[in-house]
Image 1 (spheres, helix red, strand yellow):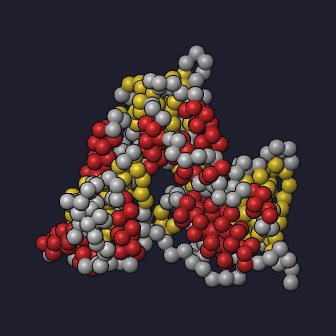
Image 2 (cartoon, rainbow, N blue to C red):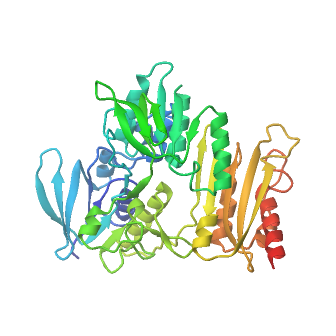
Image 3 (cartoon, rainbow, N blue to C red):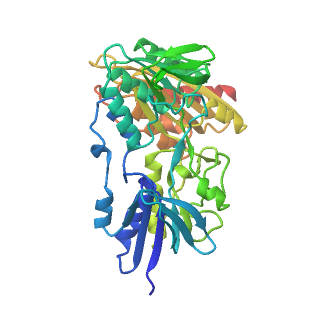
Length: 459
């Protein structure tokens, strides 16, 4: 039997997970695996960069799960600093350029795995590429930022552009480094992944921490000093001095190659696959990770959600299927957690705005509770908001903002959403109880009871 050739484009979570899974299932005598990565690292945790920047964890080595050489030792031909610049799907080959030498040539494949990730949003503004303006997408980005922060002196100021997950995490990192921090956000609240009332809780908490939160404000330029280095962020509400500027504007699917090859893309520009992670309409082309859209099990639509948890699962599915196995990725419910200093933030399922877009009629319930029995030392407050469908009582979404012990409670809701449970069913869940861990009625169950009552009263 001829040796099969798997070509992987992208050397991080999805791509190397697929390659590693395939190698575990098939030896070198049956399967050749080549992976192209344009960067300098493989299999690393970009999610850890804010914590490296804040001095909470070491980096970059601690953030690398497996080096290129470790992959090679396992029989995967990893080509670093090599960028795939073209796809020829008819002839089953890719065009790859060595970024050090400039050499470029075609490589044939039997199966192609696209794991090109996502690219950070970087608006075309004056000064956006000036020294002192930092992204946090790659370990090279993290290294440059940490070097800049290490050079810091007392009284330095930082501006974070964007108040999503990366923005609030970087605000925390800069506070830990002793910076005076301003966060500028174009929306009316930080964390637009929450409903406005829950986002307001985040804003209040960040302000209480000494972080200046400026919302409803558009960044228009980055001002530089005589040496060309960033010195301020200009907005439609004035200028904010900055010794360091960090961009936290989110990411978009990196599908330049896919678009040029006329592969199917969704509304957000991500690749569309079936549940086996095969690109729709292409028998031997697979895709996973941040370059794809995934099925939202609550709305039934595809969404772009850039998370390493999904990417690793995609890779496992692809690696199984390209070697003759059967595996599927069923979809997601949109679960995410984050923190800024001691404030924990979590959400899963639909926001109110998303429920309205789907034409759903729903009830909401918001409750305030504590992480432990109120009399037990260390009990911390939290707010839980729950959405449930009128008529059926089906759980639609949950958001949680609170202190220690708050965020991971969202996992209960994620399981309930995946199972299609109603809020009545949730309220009867047999969750663990002891005073050090929860009140008699866990906050999630209290919210479920309240939501069930709202659904009943709506008729």
